Length: 75
View 1 (tube, one colour):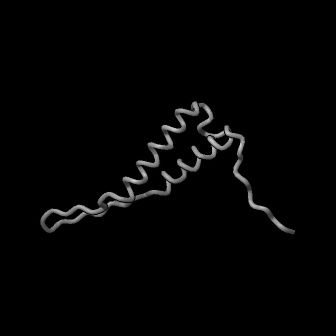
View 2 (view 1 turned 90 degrees about the horizontal axis):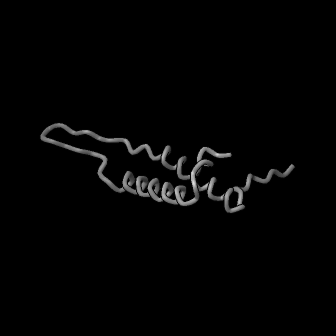
View 3 (view 1 turned 45 degrees about the vertical axis):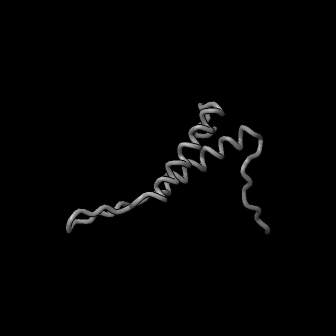
């Protein structure tokens, strides 16, 4: 059971869309602000959003019956 196992499929689709939009906003919006002689730069921190999107997609895959494949090790 994943972290999102208590959500419905519709809620998972909405959450994935929301997270994707949030990631898009972080990657495309301004990361600096300046006023006079002062300047501030913001970090984007997209790793957490990417992890959440991956978790939601993994839960959707499990429900659809297509589990994520693990790597194949040759011995």
